[in-house]
Image (tube, rainbow, N blue to C red; front, side, top):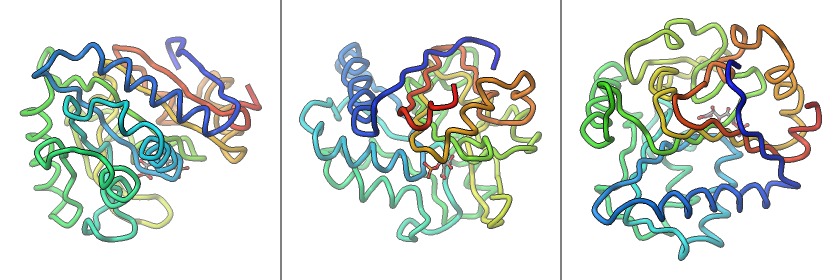
Length: 242
Ligand code: 6PG
């Protein structure tokens, strides 16, 4: 990790979820009417809990009309499949919020992955404001795997780590499930990136990422070093080793 991120440690998942919801409220307050706030969502069980919490407690407090949603990664399955990241977000958040279809940009996991990465990259370019030829997301939410992966960028995936494309095809190293993922370069052009990491099972990888000198080469998550802000939101159990 090259730059010092802002690390916030919350007592538990609920406090962390509230902290994340507050980021949304604060950032949206600065978005002018007519402008759109682009939020790249993450898959995984931790973000799912955050979405549920927001759906439960923050629906009325968030200005959904100014928000547009994108996915940082998707599994190559149809949208009603249990592994679909779109389905996870739909069931934990989307079905409760007043958002129009044209604010929600899902990766179509049912499509051919090569043409879908091209289609989705185009969609992102058309709908997210650009600087220097790169789409700049207002907020990227990321999870962390126990092996140091983030989005679907797994350790050793040099092609995705070095790619100058916006999205690439990936494969889960154990299940071999194919996925489409945002590249390191796209994420690093964001205005703000927030890692959401909770639970004791993440303590060892969090410790390695923050305390190992060559973590950069080993763990894709430590290559996330955006031009904007970098925040790590941890609960106490995930942060117990740092
Ligand atoms: C996915 C993710 C992935 C996830 C981490 C953490 O689609 O699975 O985008 O990067 O965020 O694996 O997942 P958990 O929160 O379930 O541990």
